[in-house]
Length: 217
Image 1 (cartoon, rainbow, N blue to C red):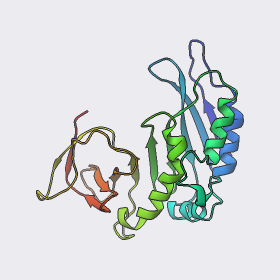
Image 2: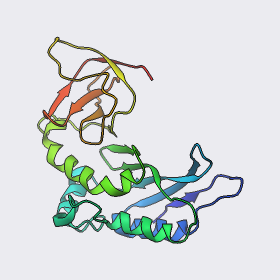
Image 3: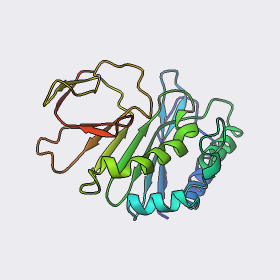
Image 4: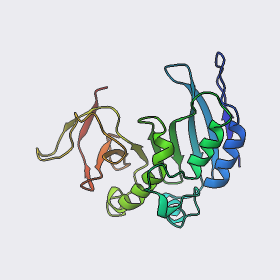
């Protein structure tokens, strides 16, 4: 595996134990893993995790659903506070550090798509990663347009507000909803979209909304 740590210079804080953490992630997820430390608004380092793998999303989901990718227990995925392989590794890391250890962003770079998952609250990625992968599996047919086109990027969730110029006035996407979580809307980017604009995937209705989007925030 060819992953590595990407270090920034901090005033007085470094996350202890990252190299061992990174190597264990590589074994659990069959990926090269790069770990970067960034400072939050309080000056505490948080982690940005990038996984690089030489397999497709379909291959990844097959092994995830079989329970041999990421050390996920499928029967426990939706149980509150159940710790996945990622959660256990973060807990081990926490024991070595006097300040709160958390993941600010986790990205999966696969052969056919990159998936970027952003933190929405404390420990949100650690606790919800398994459920997010389950949602990706359950919605795979729908966000790939009945398997006809894979988006090259997926952003989970939508953070910033979008203004929508809809093809018709009945589109259900609410551009002013502020409490969006992981399982409401995702942003998708398709090669077939000549303007490289984001499309919005609505998980509840399993629909893709196409149109012109303008980032407001």
